[in-house]
Length: 50
Image (cartoon, rainbow, N blue to C red; front, side, top):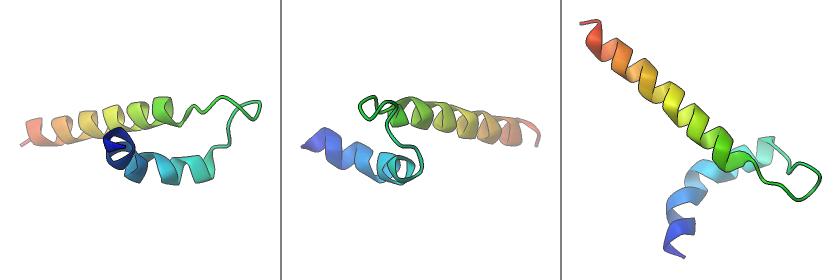
């Protein structure tokens, strides 16, 4: 229950955009991790540029 409460705010919007592959395989956690990493890199580069 705790894990769902922590991850659903991030994963639910992605689940609306990305349907499961083959009707079974949910790749939204992978997509979320990639997006979070991209956001992290952008923030770090912005902070280092000052």
